[in-house]
Length: 303
Image (cartoon, rainbow, N blue to C red; front, top):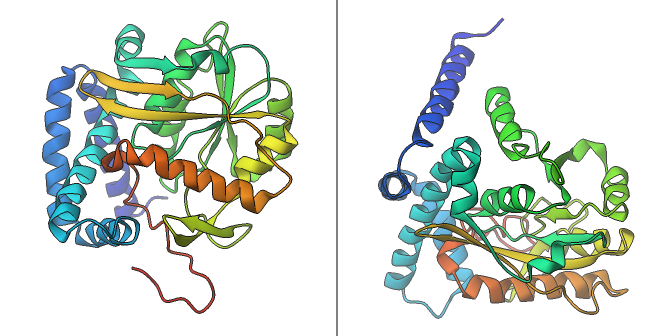
């Protein structure tokens, strides 16, 4: 039986989902304007997360002045809020509207055919846009790894949204839970189902290794190298960019000579190339995450 607090959370979550469903019918420019307002509100109201962003920027961009970091921090909160509200139309607008607003560019041929492929999808705010674009527009079945949400109502909504085009003829979307382990993921990879992988976050010290990220030791899961090796797969990066028209989903050429036999060197290379992608749009990277929360033994917290 639910407590009063649980009922309150339930109705609050349900109301939020209904709001997103209504938002899906509005013009994109209006949704983005609302996102800008929400971003400014979050920037002013959520001081703890603002501190995280500023700390990350101070570590990674020491050459910026305090004024420049402040401007960049505000932009990050705006993009964060706009991308969140964009999930309204990504998951609920008519399919032709979604397809019009999500533009696949670059080396799209890398995702065609049947060759085992790991898609390196860094944590830019357009992650869900990129996943939706490939599962809707390409004639191939894709997989990704899903982390359950503590809020069950929210969890079902997100899960359904990411599986929106799961049953599309000629394509599909399959979500593996983390508790399922790696074996079914490897099997799907070898069967020709590309894995949309997001390995550039701090998932704690378990199975992580410390490699540089902007010259700072960062606990990094070496899953990109390991999945590519175990799945005998090529690695194809995708960079998702929020634009005035929706999103540009740029498919990069497959990396050459990757993976190697050195998982530490592979993971360090992943971070180095990620820095290059971030340089093209620093305000759209997920700096709200405590990327450096896990520190080498004896090092003080950066937050």
